[in-house]
Image (cartoon, rainbow, N blue to C red):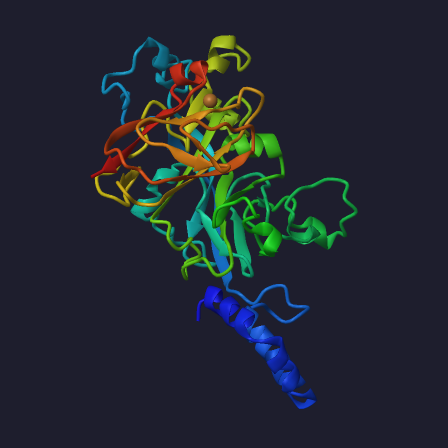
Length: 393
Ligand SMILES: [Cu+2]
């Protein structure tokens, strides 16, 4: 029985008939309340599913422009783009050593979980974690890097042993193990998903959170250790945790990825034939990758069928989860050509993000075509913070 119909049943049960049941039925009535509300008994935070993810921090070579050309213009890169993407003896170009969260099939961390076509657009982001209010989430984290790293979760509930951030917080020694997982080690982070981790009164049926490494927060996140979380309201989710009635979920993280501040900068410098002074202004500028999910200048895979890449079908309920990361230059204004969205209860085709801000925007596209989706900040447009999405008839 769906939760909505349970609630209807509860409302229709007349109070008088409950009284008439008599004292002998008090226990049964208590049981009925539990059944009709679908809520767990007092003292138990979760009666839902435990969702376990095996996620490692891996050192990966990531190319922000794998097609080698400008997907927006359909032309070779121009001089402005080449300031960021062209490699040379003193320039790293578009491909960097990065540290990324990657999903594995089990605790042996020997087999990567293949990323389905619907999530290929995540690019360099970690795997999406889905949960429903009432669930538990477990992340078995392996650090395959040569330096400590962690998982710090937003939104979900955790104790000091799963916060993943070292600071003077009165933690016991055991509760410090999560803060900086040593190279080669495995640590298990446990979370619950109470009501306050799910949609609020003004939210749609699911909300976005994120996880990121917080051992060296700035250096870790610029290295790429960031991933999305989606929490669906109780009673409104499919078995896989995705919101019912939503045909397609798309995640877009806007960021000026400052590779100068990435903890992988030494590895990237070591790969250059003639490494420049890392404080050279032109070199620093060349390492500011203005990306969406790790792609610049329209290099995100577009896909050709609904459910692939950034392709949807007209009339579908498409839910966009948007986030920014970074610093004071990371005020981004995502803009969709061709279609509008409902965000924060308002009809818009531009919304705004500050660092680590997360927004959900619902779209029912009615205008088929290949459309630009870009940050509307002029400097960011020139530097390549642009991608495309496709609406098929
Ligand atoms: Cu921007």
